[in-house]
Image (cartoon, rainbow, N blue to C red):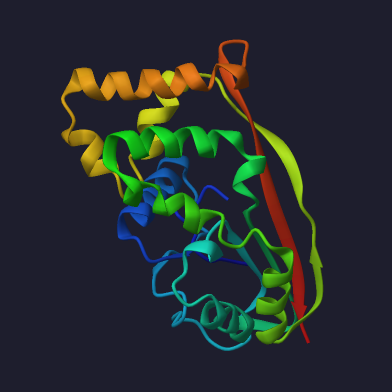
Length: 214
């Protein structure tokens, strides 16, 4: 199996070397030796035609500049009958925490700081996903959508760590400590309706898609 845009390997090909370093560290610590890690552009993966029987892409497709080329490359590395499984975020309005975060970011850093969320939700139309996969040569395309509750035990710990991977991370770090803490408190106050047992319980729409290569 190939995990495209594997990040730190939680779910392996990724463009971000720092993500891969974390993944290598975690697998080494756990004694796992069966994973091979590749740093690569998703449209030019260093693997042979038909090398894999499955490609997984969890929440990565939405961030690829050339989504069509990425899916074509995934099809190339799959053997005939191989399976594709991917997922993307759904509509922002079905994930209310997105609007809260964007409002706070907009107040502190301006409109450009919310761009990542627009990109993150850019594939929320199932018809767009279906056409992309079909144009790449996939068949048997199945798309579902549903709202799940994402739970996090400690909002105070989650938010700083969550945003450390965002483009706005440097701006957050540059804030005076008091102002930065105030920004996180503002978010947590607005997220109170989505709390459960002192932790976050936020509804999030997710769209999984499966397909196969003929």
